Length: 410
Image (tube, rainbow, N blue to C red; front, side):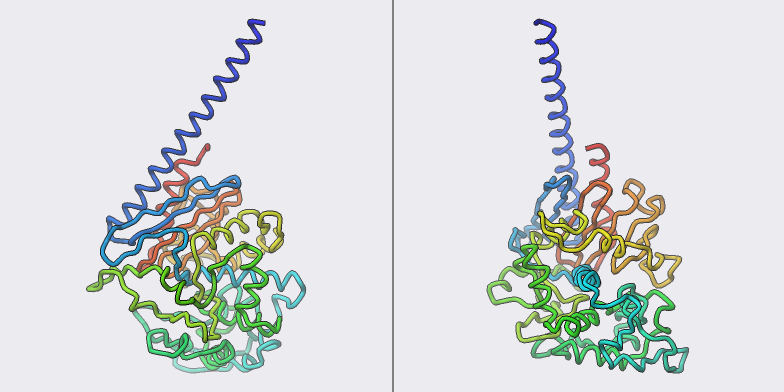
C-alpha cells in the first residue's frame, strides 16, 4: 500500500514538473517575443505591431505591442491592415480549388480563357519581338511570365502595365475592372519569353480575371463564397465601408526625409465602386481573419472539419518551381536558402540564413510589413502584422529566430 502511495506521489510530482517546465517555457517565449516586438518599435522599423504563434491546435502567443507614438493607432482584434502581397497566397488557393475541380490544366494557354494574350511581345535588348512561346497558366502561378513590378530605383518599368497607384483616380487605379487591366498587360512587352526565367510580378492580378472567366463570378464574390465565408474571414476584401475605414491602421514610414504616421501614402483607395480587384496586392484583412487562413494551411488544407483544398494541392503549391537567389538572379536576395513555389518561399537549406528553423517552412509577406509562415513539421504557423515602410525581410527572420529558440523542445 505504501509502495503504491509512493508511486502515485512520484507520478504526481512528474506531472507537476512537466507542467512547471511548460509554464516556464511559455513565460520565456512570451517575454522574448514581446521584447522583439518592442525592439522593432524602438529601432523605428515599425509602429505598433502584433504577433500570433499557433501550435498544436491552439494559440501559444497572441500579443499586440503598442508604440504609444503620436499619429499611431493601438492595434486590437478589429484593426484592418492592407496586406498587399499576402493577397497572393489567397488567390493561389482560389486557383487550386478550381484546378481540383478540373476547370483548367496548368499547361493551358492563358489565351484559351483570355484571348487578348494570343499575340504577346517581349523585349530583346533594344528591340521588341513577338513571343514564340505561349503564355501558360503555370507561368502565372510560378512568376515565370515576364511582367515586373516597378522598384524604388526604377518607378517606371517597361515591363509593368500602368497601374497609376500614385495618381488620383475615382475608384482604385486607372483600371476599374480586371478586363481593362489584363488588356493593358497584354499590350506590355514581357522581359523575356514566357516560362524562361523567374521574375516576381503582377501574375495574381491576371489570375483574378482568369477566375472570373472560368467561374462566371466577380473575383471578390468567388473569394467570399468559396473561401472567406467558410473560413469566417469577415473583414477581408478589396474594399472598405466607412465603419471599416475607421479601423484601418495608419502607415508608419521611415525612409529618407519621411518619418511619421500617415494615410496619404495608401496608394489604393479601397472604394466599393471599383471592380479592379487585384489578387496580387489588393486585399485588406485583420489579424484574426488571416490567422484563420494560416490555420487552414497548417492543417493541410482543412479548417475545423471543413476541407478547403487537398493536401496534394498544398504539395503542389510548395514544390520547387523556381530556385532562390543566386540560382535565380531575379529572386529576393535576402531569402538565401529558400526556393520559390506558387508565390511562396520555401526553406530548403536552413544553414544559409535561418539555422534554427526547420526545413520546409513556407510563407510570404506584404509590402507594408505583414508576414506569415507555415511550419508543417511542427503543425505551427507564425503571423506578424504591422503597417510600415520600407519593407524588411529581416522582420520575420528575427521573429523566427526568437520563436524557434524557445520552441525547440516545447
